[in-house]
Image (cartoon, helix red, strand yellow):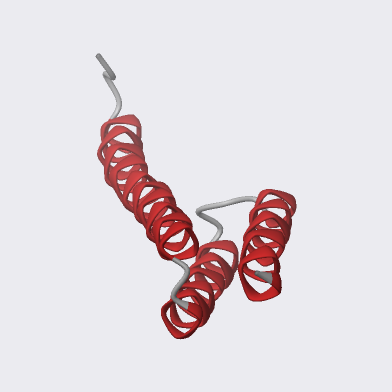
Length: 89
């Protein structure tokens, strides 16, 4: 346990940031799962909506620093391939 007041504050802050980052990651995974499900159903309009929603969320996560920009780029690329495959069917 920290003995210094500033260290105690950093421990509290880190715990809060960890929870916030978990929320960003968890929601990104959920949105990706919803996109995959809409592609599997073959609903083009729903797929487009889900893809747009996922991309916006990932961009905000990168801007806030919760996810690394290269991670976001990779996930956006995967989502675009998935959505394009659904449009091709």
